[in-house]
Length: 241
Image: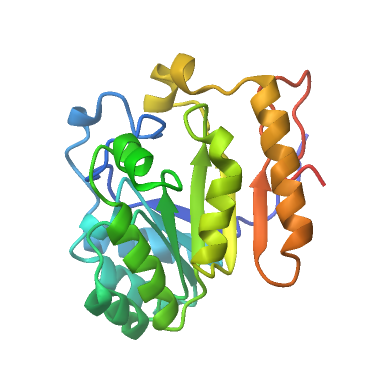
């Protein structure tokens, strides 16, 4: 029986598995040393053309850390030429004001910066690197260059109880969009599931706080809470709407 699955609208391009951080919830392959070869610039251009021909209109540039690609600006420019709406998904490590300006010049539409936690000590501990101050500066730089400030925080047992502090941090930074994304357990995060999986009680408490801030900040900051279904009998809709 033939089914109509429709055209792919979104292409997530994992440009590299390399990353300066060491987050325990990462979806990178466990045996990352085996993945030394990456598609070169021309190969990625070919992938972008093929995806556009299939109907894709939005492009996520991800990793690992995509900022480690020296050809990132060239890939962005080619994506712009092909008509994609482009979104850079980054830790912010490896970015500075000059590079944000270069992304704008190349035609990048959107930048999302991830934080590991709302306080410097836990953020740096989870990422294995002293990056909190730099992330904060880059979030402000993104907005100064005319982009909306889009922040992402992956939730798990070690930070989920700080969800109110996390949201207060995003308000203090004057974010426009905040994604609270529950850990997906594959790659490294699957290995660390016993240390990362929240309890039912933690999830219920976090969802209540997220809903509270969605109501409180409506029209000012969009809070996107990606609902997990770890303890459900059946899968639920991503946004639980």
